[in-house]
Length: 114
Image (cartoon, rainbow, N blue to C red):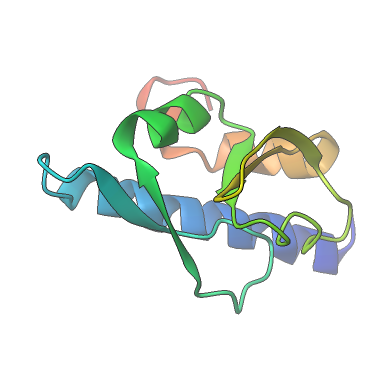
């Protein structure tokens, strides 16, 4: 993995950590929460709205990220698309990028898996 690929993978984990904070602090009465796009573009600041249950479903897998449609190829090596809708795309990282995703997953660390 070169430095560009590592930076892209780490960018995704940073956006995901921000979304974890948004989820924790969101009003429980909100039907949809504004989340940051978790694409590999470190300059992306776009948001998407998801129901809490949709985000929880994505986060059940430490290698998965939610991005806006069209942002799935922002990384060096395109990840696998596991779900698509008109509002969001769920990506799963493999290889070195997937290992970085797992290592930096706050939910995995909390459970002692990483």
